[in-house]
Structures are given as C-alpha cells and as structure tokens.
Image (cartoon, rainbow over all chains, first blue to last red; front, top):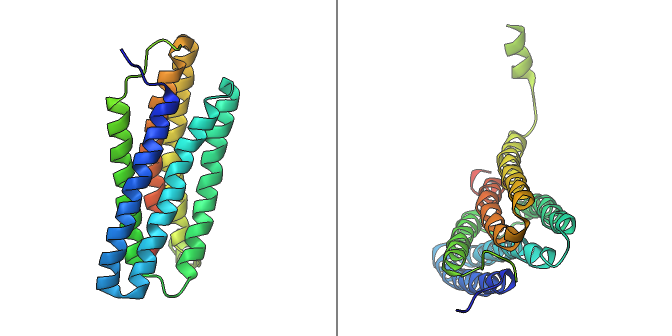
Length: 135
Length: 77
C-alpha cells in the first residue's frame, strides 16, 4: 500500500491551492472588470494575489519546519504566522490607501480564495494516507 | 455620568478596535491548536508527522478568520 508523507501532502496542497486561487483570480477579474471596470479588475487581482501569498506561506512554513527539530518546527511555523499577520495588516493598510482599486472586488476575491483554499486543504488532508508511525 | 462623558470624548479610528479583535480570536485559537499538538506529540512522539499535518489544517482554518477580519476595511471603510 502506498502511503503519503507530510511533504507530498503539503506539496499537493500548494499545487492545487495555487491552481484554484489562479482560477478565482481569472474569474474574479473578469467579473470585476464587467462590474466596475479597471478598478474592479485590479482589485480582484490584488485580492487573489495577497490570498495566494498568505495562504501558501502557512503551508510552506510547515513544509520547511517539518525538516527541523520540534523546537525549530514551532519557531518557523509560529514565527512565520506572526510575521505574516503583521505583514498582512500593513499590506491591507497600504492597499486601502491606493486609489483605483475596487475594495469590494478585492474583499470578495480574497474571501473566495481563502474559503476555496480551505476546501482544498480539507480535501487533500482527508484523502491522503499518512502512516500512523513515522517511517 | 463621568464614564459616559469620558467615552464620548474619545477620538480616533474605530477600525483599530476591529484590528485588535480580529487578532485576538485567532491568536487564542492558534495557541490552543499548537498547545494541544505539543501535548499530543509529548504523549506519542511517533505520531508527530500526522499531528503536524492536522495541526496545519487547524491553523489554516483559524487564520482564515484573521485574514477575513483584517481585510474588512475594504468594504466597511
């Protein structure tokens, strides 16, 4: 029987999640352009872009952290999480000051990308076969 | 009455309180997820690989709330 290891599970999550967020970006920017013109398109692209960056950073931190000792793992994962939240706050503060971005398009694509990537995460983890005992 | 007068004189951006609340909830959530994972790995170290993936799933769900909460200035500003 073929087992997955955590690295292949996370790599699969990164690949499928990026594909999904990429397609949300395309559909969202098309809808944004039709609804609000260029600001809608830019808002949708910015929303899915920051969603891609911040959603994949968590999976990447677990992927790199799992190669370290337990202390190193938590340092990378939790330190990365803290850094990410601070960067996200500054990113939102900066983006909300930029004229020519449609905030509603940005918010909707951001939320759609986050929820979609959660669905991908749940699907991949529930369908993967991680052995109970480490190899 | 004094309390009401003091509250009425407060100035500043109300969104800052929203930022704080959006950080507090997921902060507690991630703390719980991680502390329980550490406890579980201490009990059964051979399960570490499986628990780390499950923990990451827990963190992903918890941080979704933080990301959505912090992005609300785009629609409520």
